[in-house]
Image (cartoon, rainbow, N blue to C red):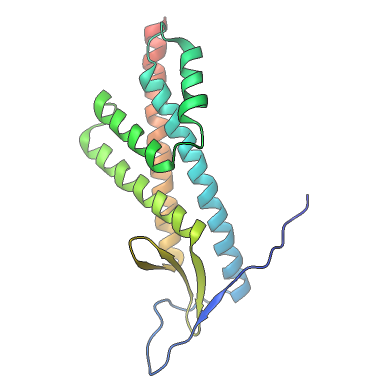
Length: 190
């Protein structure tokens, strides 16, 4: 399959008058680090789409628990209403977390934790989708983006480990809600 090779912009930041870079240089080669950042950007965006789908599925199962409401209604709701691009990730996140609160599918502490995690995932996805990667001379890489003002993230192992753990937490929580609600639905149907 054809791989795309589209020109990219990469800013370089120089520091004058003894200023120190915000990021630390890596032992890996420049090209390898940049390729890893691009791969991680794609992974995060793809994972966010998966996470969005899992939230929509959870909403459908939590709302249509009884056999009387059936699969037709749930499928229509999840695909034709919640699953459309007319609703943003933020909207779907809000519906999902409000439904968790209303149905008490999770305890309050877990709901707050998943709300915060989903918010972080959304912010990171937006930063990577709309931001610009910079290389600091004698340093590492940063992501510059706008979110309520100028923001910068240091792109290093610590950051990417946090992203991975947060996305996994969100996916596991959604999967748990779907699985438990599905089991309850199965109990009601039999």
